[in-house]
Length: 396
Image (spheres, rainbow, N blue to C red):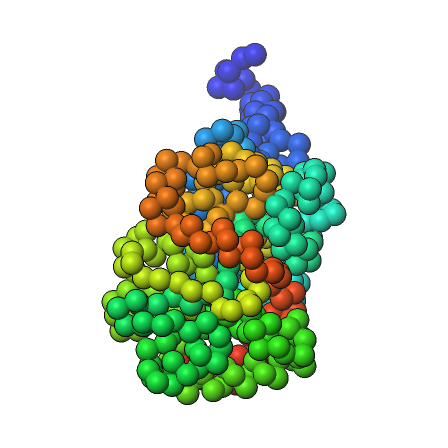
């Protein structure tokens, strides 16, 4: 073919048209290849989950350079994200591809219709999903309203964590906790439940401890719990909006006791935020309120990008990826699927858990019964009631 400069004007125009069309096909392809892989996948974490999964995401990108150019990770406070998603979707934008969340944003996202229905619509990407989960993790998956996939699991709590130099006899019943708090005003602290795993595990565990009418109905079945929390409120100075602030105060010595979970006990001690010798105690006749983190997908992700997002989620359920979730005890133990022993975890994880883990956890997890967190709608109601009736002293 002659070069365009050697052609007459009409022929030159035709040649440029052919070249432009060819360039258009090369760039856009059939079905818009401009928007095809490798993609930049935007991941927002509102649960601290990246401590458990970021290495696994990055491993996926390394293994699949044709699908993912890179992951962009950002963190956000859980209460703020549903409003942001709603605004983006109202504007027809899709700036977030994956959200890593606890039951809080999952609950709000389900209630407000912000999330993609993953099951059974994309069930073929997750064969034997329920059979592959640890049994209590499978129970947590049932809470996802088919709009999330559980990727990490923790028996959770509630447990009492305390400074043994200040607390010689830890409380083991709600009545003893209240009596200690009244005798030691402002020395007990816990965070706002809507943005704190230990905070919400505490309020969801109390109905079982107090013998409330219906532990799964915070509106009509928690009379004893709400009355108790209002009493406890009288000797608590304020409620931080996140658990990290709680652990900082506990570690610095401005508080002597908090309500914790397995992971929030182990990890801050690994990191040196809380002294290694701080102790935990279970409540007598407690019921473990199990916790999980989920991957959810906001509505609006383009179809071809969605195929890659689903592939990423499927990878996160493999034993290879799940082994990273042992982390340094942050969401202890971490893996949601079967057959991922600590020996599969990175050496740093193995070392941290051997040094800072608690052998007694295995016995307590076996001894006490387990229940899953509240369903999404009930959880939203519980947070609303707590915010209105208890949490006026929340500190930003």
